[in-house]
Amino acid sequence: MDSHDRTPSLSLIHGSAGALSALADGSVQLIVTSPPYPMIPQWDAIFLAQGAADYDAMHDLLEGAWREAFRVLAPGAVLAVVVGDALRSIDGGFRLWPNHSEVLSRATRCGFVPLPYVLWKKPTNKPNAFLGSGFLPPNAYVTIDCEFVLLFRRGGLRRFPPHDAARYASRFSRPERDHWFSQIWSDIRGAAQVRDGRRTGAFPAEIPRRLVRMFSVKGDTVLDPFAGTGTTVWTALALGRSAIGVERDDATYARLQAEAARRGLMEVSGGSPEEDWPSAPRTTSGRRSPR
Image (cartoon, rainbow, N blue to C red; front, side, top):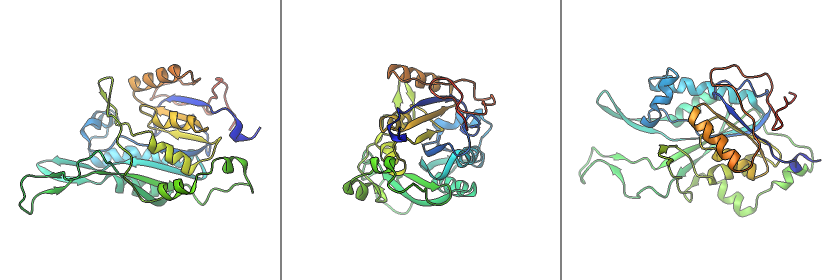
């Protein structure tokens, strides 16, 4: 059976993006993720719980995730990171915290090759919004209405056998290619940020849908190490890819499990964010899979 004809599998892991020892080296063909954004107040508690109290420490923590991403990705595979910059006053000073440039720099330091990125301009933002008051220069600020879809490759181009069936089964159309590979995406509305009374930071399914189609083939394994509400996981499965979601937060992980059950999907999981993970990942049957 060709790899693209196999039934996609789901694995949910209760753990940390910076400690993916359950996953073998080079076992993943694509990562699509959106981490907590440093210096955004809603994520302060998550960073503080892991000992990161300031901007540099927050990005030190995320750098551990990029290092693990490099290890688990196969040669030629792509890492896609959706991240936004932050505006925040510290010690009475208002400034920009350029998260995208930190992720770009640190992921490159981990060994990734940076690629041209996408600017996601959210059409839900007010077109005439700005920070400040009145109409007098010079003390207003430009509003932030874009997020970054940063793209990296592990090494050189991914290689396929001639006329690879999975690759040809995954082709996109000319209109899709021309639209998706332009640098500005302005046609995707943001997702609801509150679910069950909790802020989620979820991105719309169209973001991972495009990225999975653009940078993987049917039968590949797609990982989201900051799984959250599971948007990447569910989208990858729907597109014929196996999916792995890693989530540290207890309550969010429980909701992922419940959603998998609601969808009638098999999944495996275990452990806690502080535990060492087994040396090999488990399959959906619960058996250890070989490296």
